Amino acid sequence: MKITKKQPLRPRGRSDEKRQSTKDAIREAYANDPQKEVQIIPAKKDLVTDAEKKKLRVCAYCRVSTEEDNQASSYELQVQNYTKMIQENPEWEFAGIFADEGISGTSVLHREHFLEMIEKCKAGEIDLIITKQVSRFARNVLDSLNYIFMLRKLDPPVGVYFETEKLNTLDRSSDMVITVLSLVAQSESEQKSNSLKWSFKRRRAQGLGIYPNWSLLGYKGHDWEIDEDEADVVRTIYSLYLEGYSSTQIADLLTKSGILTVKGLSTWSSGSVLGILRNEKYCGDALCQKTVTVDFFTHKSVKNNGLETQYFIEGHHEPIIEKSDWLLVQQIRKERRYTRRQTRKCKPRIVVKGPLAGFIIADPKWEPEDVDSIMEKLSLPTEIVTSPVLEDENFMIEKK
Image 1 (cartoon, rainbow, N blue to C red):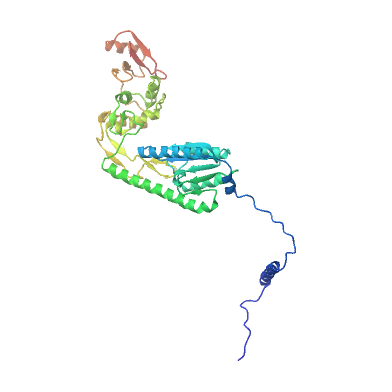
Image 2 (image 1 turned 90 degrees about the vertical axis):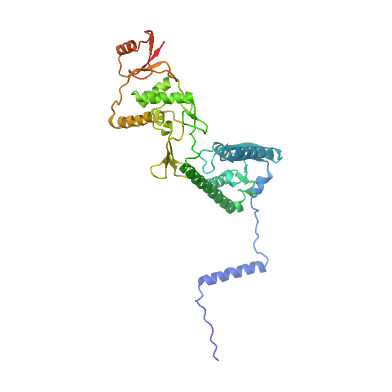
């Protein structure tokens, strides 16, 4: 039998020779005493270990997403628990409690105390943040990781300790776990949001659970109870508009009369007056889903122009304004918007109740002599005081 030498699959090249040379050098180095003196320089102290040995300036961050009773209990427990925990640890220095109540965790934009805490970290006033769990720190995975890595890069680095998960962000081996938990927290928030939306849609479709907005002048509580003092202001606004006053003139009148807006502001704007004039809730109806939230993280909302289903409920609650007057106001608004012409002649009328009681509605175009004539026709006392409350020639008359 003829035996032939097996040829290599590929010819040996310089790379093979180099690899073999490296292997031979390693064998020789271990086989013989080292010929060169090697100085070993130890690594710097591990940042995590070093941080754990010194007295840390520690703070806690607490957050609940709503102001409901059970959430209030959780919020207070977090605050009291972490205050006691930090102050009783002899190796820690208390650096404060930062807490946001009734704030969503999907964005940091409106979390005032969270942002204050971050600024103190940047200023070198905090070494460690303690929080209950990853979802309390943030429910937006991008925000969560961005702030964790940003805090880690500070000099000195700032760690975040998640008590429930027992994770310290200065321990880099926990990065993957924290990332996964952040994704889970975000997913849970999205699922809760979708569940609430589904519930709201079903309830609105049945005419249930539709409550007055806190900024709705004239109503109070969840039972649509009319606040008579505020309702008088609403009625006055509608009456003035029907008498020919513009929204700007009405806003000036309310401002100069010292009447506060529903938000407690002393200055009225044309927009705030128009918002009252076009709101169907003042005639007892309710249109739901006027706006749509288009960004889950920023909670940005836009006008619902067919993006989502809307629900209209006629006669939903007790009205402040008669339906016929409300419809007439909408017609006048439409005519003024397109024709810019006076839609109704003003007739003299005494305001008998409300914040403007004692005033007489006057046409902005009246001259002083017209006022005297009107007073005679109304058989009112001759001793009167004209009170300029609007710009230019617009005024009202107050009886003495």
